Every structure is written in C-alpha cells, then in structure tokens.
Length: 144
Image 1 (cartoon, rainbow, N blue to C red):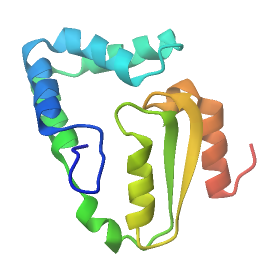
Image 2 (image 1 turned 90 degrees about the vertical axis):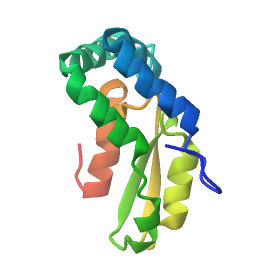
Image 3 (image 1 turned 45 degrees about the vertical axis):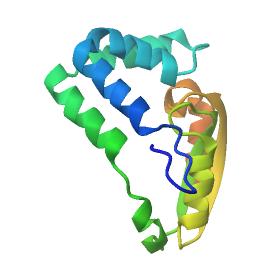
Image 4 (image 1 turned 135 degrees about the horizontal axis):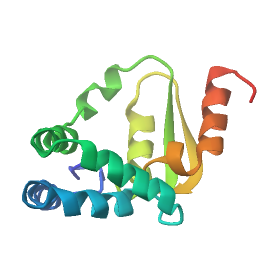
C-alpha cells in the first residue's frame, strides 16, 4: 500500500498511520467512513453491508488486522511467482490503484494477465458481481 521507489501503492506512511489512529480512536465511526470510501457509493446496500460486517469485528482484532494489511509488503516475492496469475482490478479503486495491478503484472515472473472490472471501489464482488463472476468464469474456463 505504501509508495516506494517505482511502486505507487496509493498511500504514504503518514496516511497509513492516520488510518490506524482512526481505527484505534473511533472504530465505530471509522467503519462507516471506510465503507463509504472503498465501496461504490452508487450501491448504498453494499456500503451498508460492508459497514455492518466491519462493525461486527471486535476492535481489539481490527487494529492488529489493519496494521498487518496496511503494513504488509510482499513485492519482493513477485519475481518468484511462476504460476499463471490473473490480477483483477476495478476501474476506480481508491485503496489499490490501477498502478498496483500494472506493477504486479510487470514483476510477476510467470504469465499474468490483468482483467479490469468496470466499477468503482475495492469490492467488485459486491458492486459488480455479475461482471466479476464473468471474469472468474473466463479464467477458470466455465460458461455462465
């Protein structure tokens, strides 16, 4: 997630620190705001469902999970990946910008493809599920 050298992950250290601080200080409010940020706002049902899901997670688990997610960095292993990969990216994801898919595609040693799902947000399985399923079906060789 953190911008370094030729990698544009969308966040800097200060932004990640701010996210963690928000989770620690006001988890209830953070869940609602985060859901609005990462799910396509034109789909209020999905926004609400994600917010409810996040609120069910206990605060003492949410903080270490967020630290793990936002501070994990596995870029150094991408050139060791030889298994064929399909990278699924939405057209407008504030959490994982398209530059991340491009970076991964270039760095993965094996065959990789990038499939774009035409939706906003980080969760195409919620907001563009039919298009998302079509991508999965194509990758797996199924017809839907």
